[in-house]
Image (cartoon, rainbow over all chains, first blue to last red; front, side):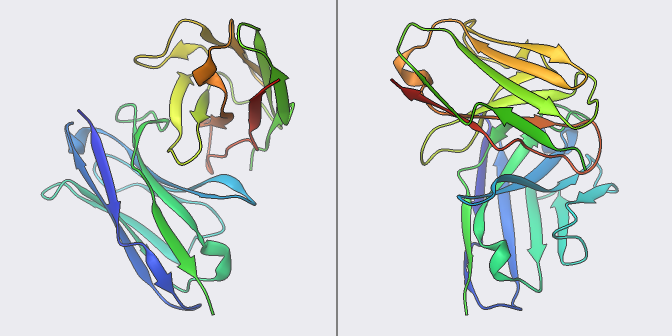
Length: 120
Length: 107
């Protein structure tokens, strides 16, 4: 059974940093693209970032480019999202999702979400 | 950035009725479109990928159609567990984007 478990969410002040982790199990981690998606009541679902199977290719929404960094560690079966220079606009539930294969970015399995709150 | 516009925003129907949801793209996405279902407090669930392919374990009452800029998700006969919010998403180019969602509520 595929499982994705996010951790690392919490409260942070504007300008601060957080690193989200997504521990994966139940599938061959190195064979699938992975993404981060966030959700707020105001903006709905927003794709944040994606990473290719080898990690060489990374993609970002304009709203986070230059501030967020996605990475993956196949030895730990873990996906990461390093978030710097956080603002109130980054407050959201963050989900990690497994793509359908090594090039299909649609998330066919999702984690339960990690809440990030940026407050002053 | 490709903008996905979903309509209607809310669909009020009774169990057993047919639901037809629309997703329109601001430019062609070929067939690179998916549909997701989300219930309160849960993560999104993939229903349809690449316009018309049902994901694993998705009942046959869910079907997707369309290509280019106009797509439709059809639920042939609503079951009680189908009342939820539905989102479309494309993977045609970067950035990937989602539509604003359609809420299917009980009439």
